[in-house]
Amino acid sequence: HCVLCILSSATESLIFIESSGVQDIVGVLWADETELVHCNTNLNKAEPKPNWLKEFMKSNQEHNDLYTQECLHSQHFFKDTLNVLRRSCVHTLQRMYGCEWDNETEEVRSFDRYGYDGEDLMEFNQETQTWLISTPCASIVKHKLDNQQIRITDINHYLTNVCSKWLKQHLGIKEYICKTQSCVLLRYNALFWSL
Image 1 (cartoon, rainbow, N blue to C red):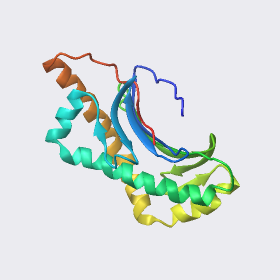
Image 2: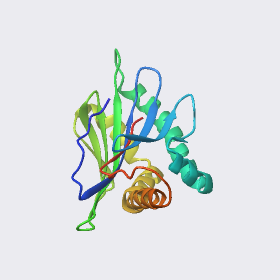
Image 3: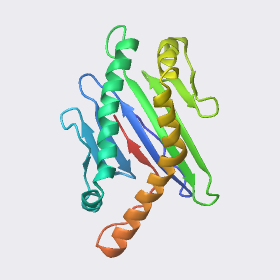
Image 4: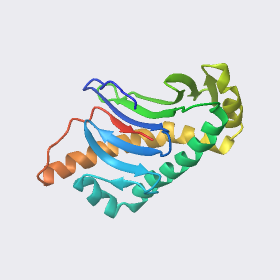
């Protein structure tokens, strides 16, 4: 399990965290301490949890489809990558990607990084469009990822365009629904997706 600190109230975050376990890959999108979306290898789809998000997903199926697509892609990627990294015993591969938005300065900072057994493995550099490794054991995976130009384009598009749009959309949906219905308005400090 990953433990992340809550960010300051002036900063909003959309962060997806993916992690493999012994047999299953489980994904959860969190806001504060509320589970928003759940996905695992048995479901093979993203399942919204709170009623306000279920209502939103009913009228915005393409949004739910994007979460499901990412969940399924991550399952395959994690299994393939773990086979490259695994040498013995049980290991954990983690991915954290997303963006932070400072609602005072309007500045957006995006990131995509991997860890292996709790240690930094590599991070995507948007300027060079390549992966920077933190340990020599990541060189094989880096070479494989650096040669996947379509995936690099997708990652860069997500980090540059999609993440901040989704973050602001989640914040707006929750605020709107809580104004029109009886629900508790959470302060969005961070969103997490664990796989």
